[in-house]
Length: 196
Image (cartoon, rainbow, N blue to C red; front, side):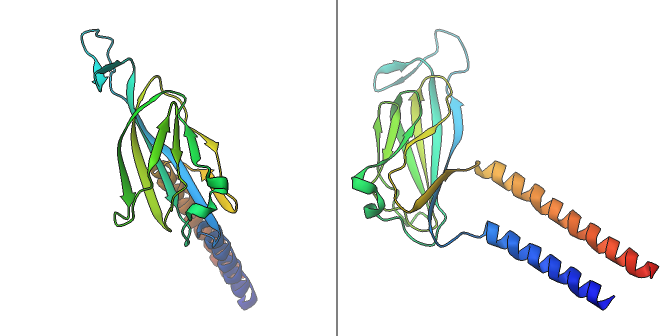
């Protein structure tokens, strides 16, 4: 019975270590991005209602958020951008204006971005360790998926991730499933030892 208990504890610790290794950030440089809110400003077909920016009427105005996060423990420096090429995101509809940018933590500057047609160019600039930047953009057109058009990095892993709300939901489900499995295994062990 002692050997079984020690084996079970070892297996649970091994599973926990594997899970932590998968969840905790690695030491290599990484960037994550996602498109958050994508909200139309006109949800009516009433011709008497319109939205204009800079005196020009917009046919299908919408506000879109793009968040870029550096979860790594090191800064992504400007010299990491190969040949000083920017990171480019394509929204597939015209970018009318940048409405705002927000950095977390607020003490770190948000890199400047340059709208160019349907694309948003970022960098070369520093993205601090553990920094998250959200850009709010005014676009004109139907809802489209945002695509990473150019990844100019060498040695930086950049991936699209789920929005924060969806990630939290999935992590909650995974945590509950892990707890249920651990409870089931423990119940089986207790039942088995009582039968002996």
